[in-house]
Image 1 (tube, chains in turn red, blue):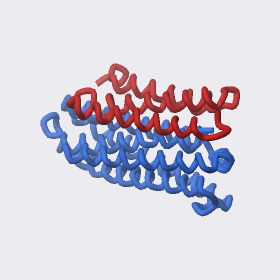
Image 2 (cartoon, each protein chain N blue to C red):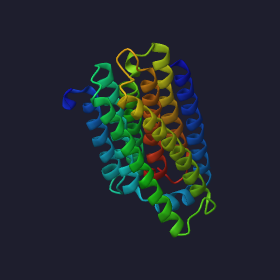
Image 3 (cartoon, chains in turn purple, yellow):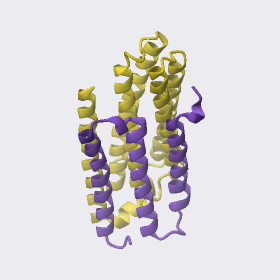
Length: 91
Length: 178
């Protein structure tokens, strides 16, 4: 078993880079709040999707199950960003 | 295995409702939530995310090893999952201690009520998941799991990944959003 050849290893490396980008780059004040918050939550949504598809192996799950979990990502991200845009003085 | 997916789905929905309610309360008092969020240690929160992602990856590798009947490797990966789980607990304990020393409690303000509630429920998941991983580790060391007998390992792994993905949303919600 060669770790570097595992798909989950490639996914893990991507998730680590995405986390560093959100935490130590996008969160800085040199980005406007809108760019930062939308970027940070879109990255979070992508990260969750990769965890579901590759770590939880939902990529191979029945379509109904996969759709239900992917819908959770869309609904949660939409709710968070919807409330964020509705909040005064934040954009 | 179906029961585990129902539990994971229900838990995800519950957290989704909590996330929406947090945002609803933030909508009512944006200045207070912004000021209190700025007092959180986002470096520690980022580190927590890297720890949990690594933990999830190690457990995913354990499942891959068992699928290929590489039974010597699986316990090592699961043990890595346990140790990184404990690292998260240690990091979160340090963060709570920092807050308590500074006189910050759940009753301090609505933001901190949410911070302690959300991170507390999540920490309970981490502690429960770590206990499950210890159980799976003892079984993997005894070579209980094989490519044809791996349901329990996969159920525990799926729960552990749920703990990871919930933190992926929780972290920006509390620490990065401004």
